[in-house]
Amino acid sequence: MAKYKVTQSAVSQLLEDVKREQIAIPELQRPFVWDSVKVRDLMDSLYKGYPVGYLITWQSVGAHLKGGHVAAHQQILIDGQQRISALRAAVAGLPVIDKRYKQVRIKIAFNPVTEEFATLTPVIGKNLEWISDISELFNASSSYGFVKAYFEANPSAEAAVIEANIARLESIKNAQIGIISLNDDLDVETVSEIFIRINSKGVSLSSADFAMSKIATYGDRGRNLRKLIDYFCHLAIAPHAYADIERNDADFASSSYLQRIAWLQHEAEDLYDPGYSDIIRIAGLVGFSRGKASSIVSELSGRDPESRKVDESRIPLAYDRLESALLEIVKKYHFENFLMIVKSAGFVNAGMIGSRNALNFAYALYLRLRADVELAEGERKRIVRRWFVMSMLTSRHSGSFESTWEQDIRRITSIGAAAYLRQIEDSDLTDGFWNVALPSALETTSTASPYFQTFLAAQVAGHARGFLSGSITVAAMLQQSGDIHHIVPKAYLQENGYADRADYNQVANFALTETSINISIGKRPPTMYMADVADQIDSGVLRLGEITDRDALVSNLKENALPGNIATVTAADYEAFLHERRRLMAATIRTYFEAL
Image 1 (tube, rainbow, N blue to C red):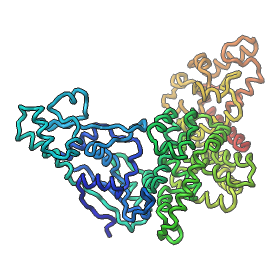
Image 2 (image 1 turned 30 degrees about the vertical axis):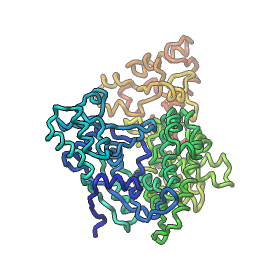
Image 3 (image 1 turned 90 degrees about the horizontal axis):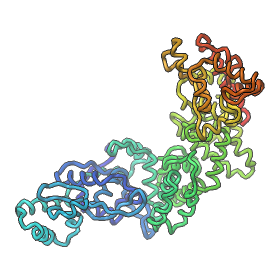
Image 4 (image 1 turned 120 degrees about the horizontal axis):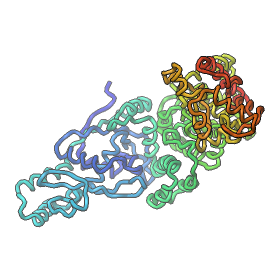
């Protein structure tokens, strides 16, 4: 059974349908990502009769339009937003939103002599042979007057050629564009699957894009909720854009939503800068206990998850729940407190966190636990901190994470977060994990490994100093500058038969070290540079680092999970050193985790 039908629509009719909101174009309030060259190319393709791809729409049940009425047959454009925006700019002469959220015009020029399209430049604008803005032809009351004016400016032009080419240009309004209309009775999951499989200019669209498109169809409220998500994500990365948004988006600025995120204009923290797909997923967990973005679309479409039937009376309630979740997510107090929890676990910069999903779920968990008035703040922080680190160590939120998320939320709701967390720990973080699986996982060359990064977090949480540092901590070096140093130097190992980087670049051979110490060590083996440390302990004369006390050296080696016999390690002992270092690193992580 076909899940869609294919129709054709003239460019002029398509733009009229958009104008009358029979087709909802959520992207119109987002920055236009095409450059003017792509707009020019689109016009050139239409002029030459080349195919420009299909638009894909799906009916939005119960979508609210301006004025408060409901459009039973409004279509959501789920693929083709940028092409529609380009047509509005070039044909209708309407402005687009630039990266500074300012309305700007994109003017496409046409040369009826050479049949070339170009982005308008000052040079082209002064050349009378060019039509400087093709939208003036499309919006002219009479093409006759337009052509007459052209000949007056270009008296030597060949009349028959110019008239034919301008007529051909004007016929772009009648060019047919294919529209794939997904059947109205398709369930949300099927539409979402179709949506995800669509490719627009080689860019794969996600279910979060689909959810964002759906959100924006709910009248002014939906458009503002979508903007709330977009602007929050944008300001988290570029705080300076606040003034642009405030100045250039009067509708949003006059709503209550802009003030909800105004605090971001002074925010410089980059530990966690969620994208809109992250916000959608968190909102799904917080507002609907759902892990899939398509499930949010289902809720916003009024679909009852039990009966799987559409009940339009559910739609306003679903938007209430979405808005409530979003306002919790963007709240300054909540966001900053969550970041403090993550930092208190030792993850002090974004480079230490390879799993965005681990952050997303942990933030959703934090927000959900805030609703438990009987849970003490300290216990709430402990659970979130411990859950986050557990998920980093077990890769719990990788693979088919959406199903795991929903299962976790159900169990947390059923028996409580603390009890469920204990069950996971008892099941996954056994002695076998700590003593066998974790040391084995540390047998890697990837410094981005969650196990190595968790080891560094353990050092941060334990206030560890860098290797052979007397006062400079691992935390300070991670936040400022420090070297990942080969404990047994790379050059030394290469000279002694370890030519493969998989051997000398093992993370068990790495320690965070001050640059000056790293330079002083050079390519000397531990037997040589540790002898310098021993000499300075005896003499008090600094030669390598700042350690002048034997107990301080013992403490430093322990803080860096290094075996006590490091001063005797040679190339011949290298494999045994790595084995012991992995064991010590795993033990350090276990001690850290159990203290969280």
